[in-house]
Image (cartoon, rainbow, N blue to C red; front, side, top):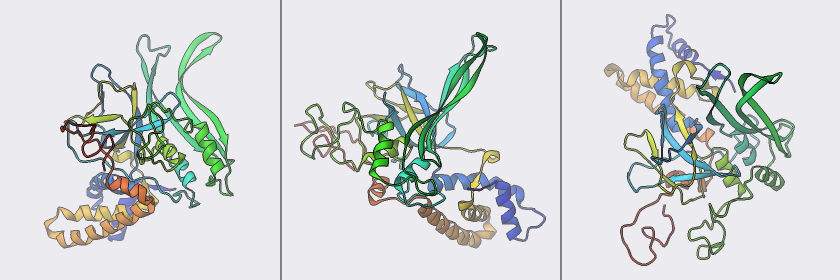
Length: 384
């Protein structure tokens, strides 16, 4: 997919408006960042995942505040399985944080209509900062931004790529510390002529087995049984409905967690710069999914959204001008229609995913004692 820079998009806008001397260039470049922020939060949904260590003294994570909006928080167990952590309402009553789920029909360049192909190709990389020494740093640790990702090649090999600091030795002498990239082939899956993964049970089982999704830790999450009967006697809260292994694999790839509810919660501080966890939170780190604030020089606009972006520029250029309010109304309607069309093109979701977007589950504390009523309105269950 080709990308446009903000300068190219602004030049298209000025050429279409007969502004050959480019008098509006600086003003439109100023609007570019704000238009992209609006599109990213409402339509494009381009997110970044980072791993943060939890400060066990305060049971919190200090955020760098360089993001526009928090999307979700997840944990990873010893098998590498990622589970969502849900926000509760014990301390604060802010608005729910929602996200658009992944497309069911594949959004790749071949439009192969494969849910499994879409999930793999839409895998979001995890960025983790690791520290190590270098021969010239002395006693000072050096930060290395390590990226972990999974993907599929044209031959149908599902692979995992990890980065970590590696010390280089020459004739037994430590000479350097580099950011090393390690690629491991996990399994072989069936692909079509375009290299897209086919939606078969064999492919789902192979990928989920190599990602440890099929061996879910029962002590972390109880699922199965019925609404009245738990899967085993050790479960007092359980999930009796789970679509398939693909639900767990989609969460691991960075999609919005749906259909999975855990006894793990977090809060957000009043200033929005810290994530708060309960004192008995049994994990050392979390993966935080956020929408980043991108600088104008690093901004790249996908070709599929260039029409929406230029129309947004025209709307922003008129909305604060008292003499152009009629144009602002017209461009605002066009911008809204184009954003909705782009949203439908990028996010094709099922009815179950739409329900999670409109009414995600949340923990509601109950101050009414009596019986076995642990949560308000139910006997140990969640409410939408």
